[in-house]
Figure 1 (spheres, rainbow, N blue to C red):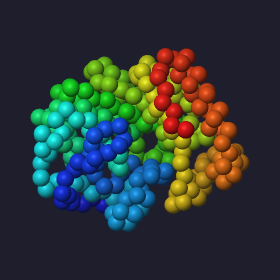
Figure 2 (figure 1 turned 30 degrees about the vertical axis):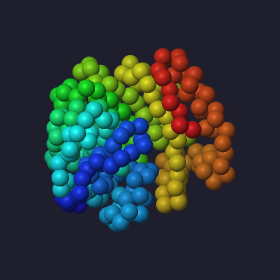
Figure 3 (figure 1 turned 60 degrees about the vertical axis):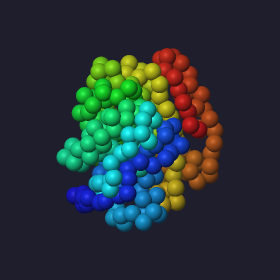
Figure 4 (figure 1 turned 45 degrees about the horizontal axis):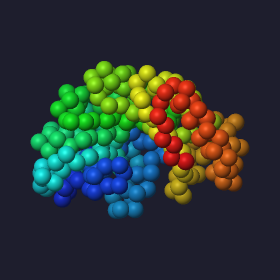
Length: 264
């Protein structure tokens, strides 16, 4: 059960340095409930909802509409602190309404999501000068996905969404993040994604004080044979694992003619 509120905010636009001019987060919280999500701790630090992550959602309603002159032909990211296509979006259509209101300014749009629901808005995407949808994967193992990110779309549905987006002429990319050592099969993910994308991004699983023990406990339960590896990486700060993986990722991306951006 997700506790949903509707809240008034001053505006939806925030300046960002995340590869765009502005970021829009239509919601506070995210029903995908990913156990590793960095936004959970940040939301609490900023005085947001205190319930367990994944059990609450605030739908934002801005006090003033977008100023088209301010965002004319700018670059806008959806989103950095929530998933604009979380399961509740199917009902609320907050993200779809935002896209409609952005159309007069004709900005470039980048979307990061774990949801196949993104294909619903292909009709709107075609009305912008450029839209790129980045679909995020942490694993191809759907059993692991159900435990670690319980309400995100399955890998199979994500690949179907990528195929539909590409067929519609929408820009596509894949983000392999977070990479779980010994669980995320980057080579298999690159091979599976290559027919749908020309670029991929890769980032590590970064554990923070507020989620370190809970994530390690989940991994220990699901994959006890990896306990030693995770202790080496996250308690003894072993570095060579990521250095080796970086080389393997670049080799496999070259093999499949995929551009790689590795953030570790």
